[in-house]
Image 1 (cartoon, helix red, strand yellow):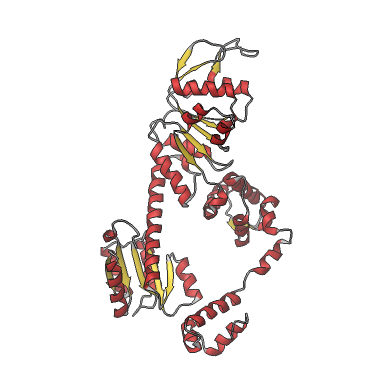
Image 2 (spheres, rainbow, N blue to C red):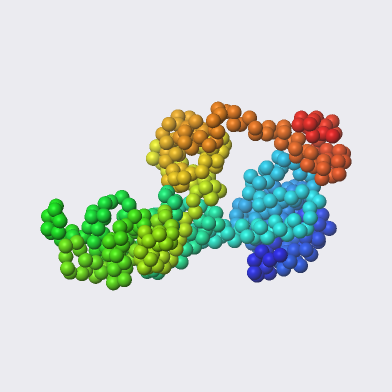
Length: 459
């Protein structure tokens, strides 16, 4: 198992008051190539943490004489927040597991555990730590610019987007951004511009599908006086205005064949000719194009010029739809709510049921639709807590499935049912030894019977 290439640089702290367990973990992890330090008490673990930094802390929860593994978790999340903590216990309970995970533990394992299972969790923890570090590093490179402030996401797909922004910003190569409507294509274009050598120059964004052909042509290339009815004077186009800077052409697939030819000439010759003029004007612009349609498919169907397509797609960046990165919805929701709080001077929270609605909806309008849905919810809300009823009907329609919203919660398990299922799991793990199960759960046998009976799990 190789979590990273140079495992000898990985520092792991093992905390357990049982010498046999400490020695076993030191030997097993050492054989995997990790550097291992051991402590027998929570106090000793905290002292060691003042001298060394650890990538991973593996700690038993029940330690003596004073501090517990949960105390070790809390302390390391404070002094070494990037470290990942894996907690182990022979006396687990649902409450303890919840407390551990809420406290920031990467995972929670019950004794007896399989060595292979622990090693898998160590590898996963290292991968997660590396991902978080890389994400943070890339965002730190980019977040200095306000244009990136709305690019939110921690999923691997968004990490790839951040990587490409960081890599292409210094270049002058043409970039083609793919993504559905509302995924943030302009934000990516602005981030590329803001983090490159053209950052101090002008940035122009134009939606090619929002203007008729004649108006789009003059917007891009300019015109001279008398070139058409209403041309009462000379006008510089966006390419001239953006000289030295960046032009972002959104929905470039909507451009007519004639304008595609003119754009191609601009890309190849770095010059423009105003409408009605024979004089060429040299320009130095970086072009970033975007489309929510597959340009390769349009080329096949002869709806888009192949030579222009290859000139535009020197570098490609594909933005994932929100439905493919639902893990980012809480982050995005928090970001938008904080902005609405600043604007309105009120605090807002989202109820768990409303979050369920947000996570269930398919978001065809992507991040923009999420922002609009939350803005509408905030506008209608009076309590400060957003509920499903505050969200637009379209957003909650899939979740409701034609029934009353309150009926949707009927199938959710109660706390008693969860406890019973957990008790049944423990009972099975100890070979249906009710004495052992009761001891692990911290209850007597009569209580164990009552817990199991609540969902008819007691056999």
